[in-house]
Amino acid sequence: MDRSILGVSAIASTPGAARLFASSIVARVPLAMLSIALLVHAERLTGSFAAAGIVTGAYAVSLGVVGPVLGQLVDRRGQTAVLLASASASAALLAAIAALPAGAPLLALVALATAIGAATPPVGACLRTVLPAVLPDAGAVRAAYAVEATASELAWVSGPPLALGVGTLWSTGAALVVGGAVLLAGTVAFATQPASRAWRPATGGERPRGGSLRTPAMRTLVTVLIGVGVLFGGVEVAVAAATDALGSTAAAGPLLALWGAGSLLGGLVAVRLGGANGAAGLVLVLGALAAGHLALVPAAGSVVALAAVLLVAGAAIAPTYATVYAMVDHAAPEGTVTEAFAWLATAIAIGASVGAAAAGAVADHAGPGAAFALAGAAGAIALLAALLRSPTLPAPAVAVAAA
Image (cartoon, rainbow, N blue to C red; front, side, top):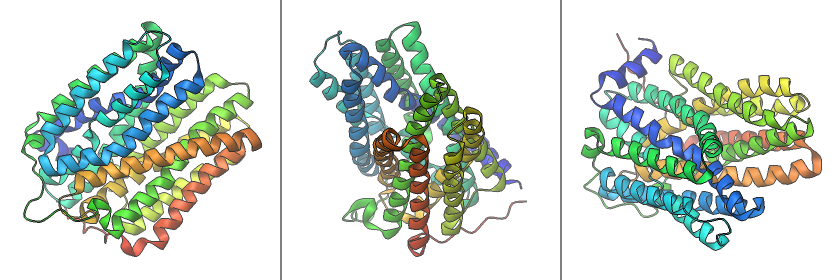
């Protein structure tokens, strides 16, 4: 059977799986909204982009640091209570920061942004954790990870325009309230699905000291995704710097949307081909990721060239995610899978923050081409880490023959 059919049909034919997928995507749209929505809201209240950057930085750091802690709670207590409590807290905190008046103290904004990041529900990690329990075999799970990585791009394509659109038509505070409402509704819909409510953490053994990062395989995956995150953060800044240098600042948004569209298309191809598998598959997709983004260096002088290369380079993003996700169930110690998926999200967030800061400094001193080179080099370092530490990674899963 064609792998794309296997993945989609497995999801569609498994009771509740399609609703799990749909509700998880809805719940993740606000995550793509919040960074930009917090930035423009904080700038409106303070009149300073520097202050707004501090607010969004506090949100990102808190999200990355606390995510694995929430993952630990899910692994110990189950999904329902943790998801409902964190989503309710997030919605309330977003409403609170939206209600602050102009001239509100920066400390209050930072405190609320930190709390919002800490309360963000780990819906994506929970979905990936429950998939092996609801799908029929390892082949279907791998295909479903590719479908999920592809579908999640829809959130990142739609989130920023939604945030900016609501902010323009109504207010920046309204964008945050809408984000909180969508987050709460999507998370409640996910957490009340039978598969999510029925999922229980592994029992019969004591939680390993060091949690999910105890194993060399998980440490390898986290290291790789930090490098991938640096690439992501570097490209976002480099695109903005390049369009500014070319006098086409408005083109930055459409260019980044093309980058996301490339990931979406790459994910669709990966689903059809069955996705990469094991250490060799990871090396393959990381090689494509690094090479595609290094090709942005000579394209930096033309918006048209950037558009074409970003579309192609983005095609390796969703397959990279899918390949890493497919390893986690075997890489993480028993009873730590949700925490492991949360650590992967943290790795991306940390890398993206470092990449954005480094690319900004490089772009100021050496131009956007150098910033693209930095991003591509980060991808090459991630590839090197995967090559050097490939013996620590799980063996390729055996494909299950389909009629």
